[in-house]
Length: 443
View 1 (tube, rainbow, N blue to C red):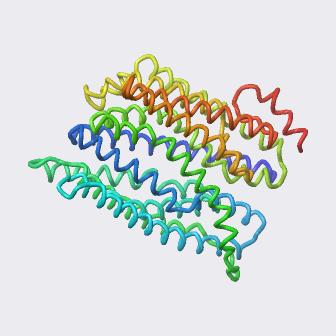
View 2: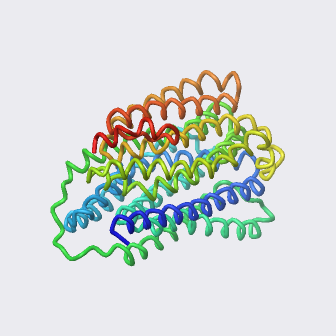
View 3: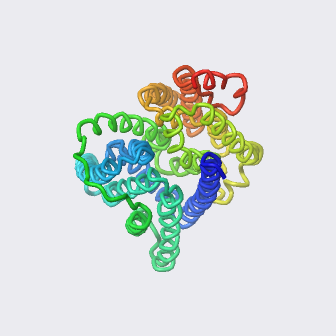
């Protein structure tokens, strides 16, 4: 087997392994959501979802954009055997993320203490939930270290499987222990923190096992340069995360905790469509960066076209199920959640359009064009906010779904154009034979 064939074989294995892990992890995630919807009162379930949405948003500034930045930089440095640079990147990112995430945790906690009265029990639920910010930031960072080094599967197992599996075990144990008084969002968040600490420990062991950097003196950190470059990813990741959580946050602010819980289930259902897509993007991101850096444009185009056509075919049956009989899925959570079916249909159309558009944001970021991605996502956020502000008062959670879907569609249209015009790469699964010719000309 030639070096090129070996690389393609390894890429296929990583995609297949990532797909398996993401399917397993997403099934665990859905199982956890079902379990919580069954054991928590609807308002407590909505509160838990709202707190976790804020946690995910706060993690973005905590990481200073380090996750995608490091995945790209470590992959490129490894391909060029710049071992001193790799060591410096690993140390610098860990220290920076830890310090910044602690600052974000303190600032968010102070905000809660100021804005929520002490007699309101939600105050303490938010404070406990925000403990997850530094814990999850470090977990995601160390997993990015592993993926950038090439340990694609090891860089997914702790957060995708172990954390969720342990959280489920704790929930079942808590269900028996708190049977007489009932579970609530606060207890569930404590269990989530315990599961995250455990996953963090496993990630540390995996780093020791896989991330064996050849001996070299650690180079001096390029602090200001790295902060400048990673800041683009910070803004980009913040916009992407805000875009994904905006509907839940605005429903929580405008309609209350019960509607938040119902809408969150529709969001989780639509997110199932992205399992194969995210698995492929996570596995191929380092190769996108390496191929583009080495000017292997034809191989890059072929890899993207073949991979995401398969992803679309795998996803299509789930899309049809949600559109024509989504209540099969929603009934699992309980009768109250069947009201989310129209929202599930709308969100599913948005997500499937995103899949057909291909890995637009990942491709631009791996090629060093984060600014273009920020423009596209920024436009999407504006559309999403305006859509939610206008449509939620008129249509409730269905308005939130429509505003979210419109934002996703516009985002992908803009980024597809940017990928084609700036990189010569045609990311959509259709039309590659016609539009993909630019990549061949560029090479």
